[in-house]
Length: 377
Image (cartoon, rainbow, N blue to C red):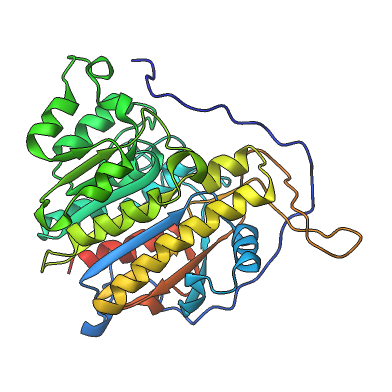
């Protein structure tokens, strides 16, 4: 079935630069165990809840722009810092589908695959393991909720663009909170049998279509929530609303945080990726990174009240080959080497129980296996 989900065009960049080589100070990691062996952490290293925040497409240069714009970034308080190798099962420069899948199932996969391994076989995701344990679960994004990153956690498909079946799987899986764009994928015309998923969602969950309606909700009265705020992507901050990402994040935390058995939540800002594909201006990229960091701040505030919470901040890959050379006054200017993805390692920040397991350089599938180990206990 052809795609019915609206997508905005992406402009390809034109300038070429030297490869960005930047290092991060990292705490010594506790490595993942070799295959066949089991890592047995101290009980204090096992989180009760996990918040995974992803700035899609953001590399070190993206975070540099944010840091120069605001020296009080929330991520500065996260003392464990690492780097993630984003390669896929059969490629070096990856994409959101296989890299998010590596985080979700602990296995590297192929381009376009979501929630399945390199052989196309469905593998249980960390979100599904969490659900099996009685934990609450949530997916929040500024793009379509059926897009690659959330789909890798909430569905299993050999094509990230098979939006109708992905929407159906997400809507019927029992995920407690789903928020983002992508309303078109839930309409009857997106389903092979013309099922009206939106009508089903309205019967089974609290459903909202605007951020204003979301802000009017009393989270304490909501058992499950679906918010679909656009037919396709929600757009940049000025389009989706200045409080959209933070409102979605805080509402998700309020709802999921009521479960005494804990929760697993993924929060994504897609626009750091989309705008880098379009080689956007410094102000736009910086704004998206700062808005994402505001969501991180909410996660860390929740952690302060619930010390058993692990907060992870990273990306799926770097986009744009963004680098920061200087002008004649030795002030930075932003330049791109591509309008696509690069193979650059991406930063990871961790805080909370088990955070030290994420220091140093890790493969993306290693990060996924650690998450699976944590929620599976």
